[in-house]
Amino acid sequence: MRILKFLGKLVLSIIGIFVALLIGISIFVPVYDFDEPYPFHGDYLHNPYEGMDSTAWLKCNFHAHTRTAGGVANGRNNSNELLDSVYRSFGFDHIGISNYNTISDYDKDNPSYVPGYEHGYGIFKIHQLGLGARKVRKIDYPLWQTLSMKQHTLNKIGQYAELAIPAHPSFVEKGYHPEDFKYLSNYKLLEVLNGYRKSPAHWDMALSNGHLVYLIGGDDAHSMTNINDPANRFTLINSKENVGSKLLEALVAGKAVGVAFPMDPSYTETFPHKRARFEENLPYLTKADLCGDTLRVAATKPLSKAEFIGQGGHVLHSETDVDEASYVIQPEDQYVRTVLTFADGTELWLNPITRHESPDQLYHPRLDHLIYWKTAVLWIAYIIIISMVILLFRRRKKLRIQNSKSKIH
Image (cartoon, rainbow, N blue to C red; front, side):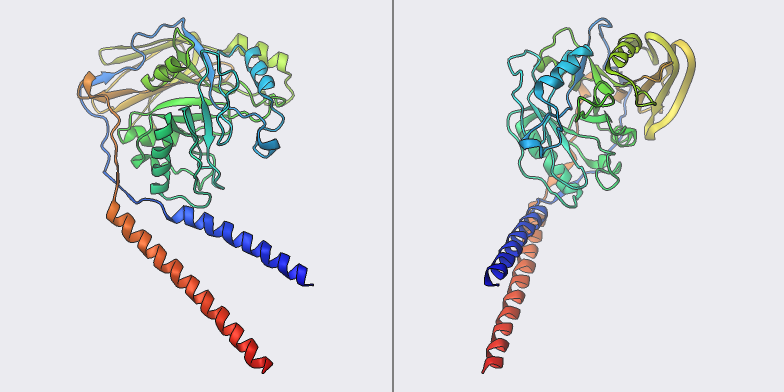
């Protein structure tokens, strides 16, 4: 009986310590204030596809998982070799592994290798990709997350990686909110296309508030035996060199296109059939030219639909069943991004044309400011509250002991 009581107390103590650690990690976060953003403005229209080589597209996926930690991490039955072979069978040029909180060194001697990982333990899937990572950010906030927590995480990941990228922002309703991206800064890419979700509202919120953020697409693949995991959401990068550093440079420069390749609605497709469909139907961007204020776009296949989208995610203009589509950018258009849809349902998502004062005024404004005095006041308040709770528990325990002794006597 005493052993059972001892074990019960031990388990409760371990749970208590674990909960206390979670709460401690979550509340002792620096406090940030955020400047009000302002939209893109100016007479200069920046086209990230200027000088594009329409023959130099590389198929890249930076978001996929393999089996780690004995299967505890969600890589299911993916081995590094299996994932690599499946993506190579679809003709991918860069095959990235982004395991949870672990940098994989698989195929690290390949010039295309980019060290990366997916950060995050939280129940609300507020995750980030760290690409060009030198070190893993171990700390996360597993329960709720304030805007300060989200900004602090991006800042910290960015200290140890070339790129900190908010991943699948629309994955769950209580994760990243579109309104967060009005103020979040210190990141250059957003995973707009993910194997589980598309996140146009989050991207348009960032762009509408003057954040020069380009897109990335990622399968977020977890099982290479599932036909619907590989080669669905990925990135085409315009680069002649399949070298890791060059791929990241091209992504930051906006010389990339997000691809949403349609799944087979019957869910009975075989891998050979999907590979054949992929090879036959995958389109490539051939034109994204800006002539004065006129944007012209075309691809290797006819366009079933072309949508030109601007401030607030509003469709400015659309065309159907054309070989080439165009839009005259209006003085009030602060940015214009394009989505091309093809006969089989494949979509190409283009990076935006943005307004600036001049070619030298392309920058990524920081809106966050760490407020030391607010942080100090808040932390002192937390310490006082925690101390009072501890004292209260100790006092109650002392009273219980005294009452027990008085009953005995």
